[in-house]
Length: 195
Image (cartoon, rainbow, N blue to C red; front, side):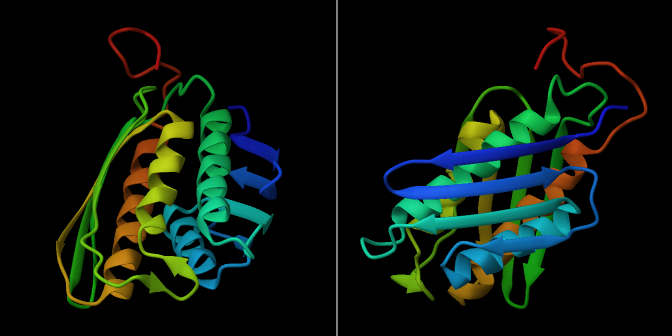
């Protein structure tokens, strides 16, 4: 089996990102985006997906958090796409529920090769820490787009926005962990023969 790893460097006038990813990791995270809550969410994703992720981002936070949040999602999605390669021997589909106290989130993933994301997190606050609540689902949409995956995330219930956001990222992590798991074959799980 080849190593399922990726290195992504993304440099624009708005952000500078260096990212290393291993799909067959232990959940080790070294994440520094300049936005504490984004670091917290990406660390939760890393830990529960059991991937190893190193991500450093210098962004134009003097403007706002949007470019950093979006570009970190895009870089992570690019890395996932690279590391998955042809997607030989992966389970392809993953689904999970994740609770955090009163909050309950559901995530469903298909490593389809078709970028699509539908998210309903029902966040009410303007921001969590230094991250605007509108950018929380945007990170996951950006990731799904660049990873070329189908992603559905729904908040089933919850009242605390921190709990809802964290439950959503944990549900995505657990679904991703299932989808990227190897099934012991070298086949591509598609009737088309390609993903």
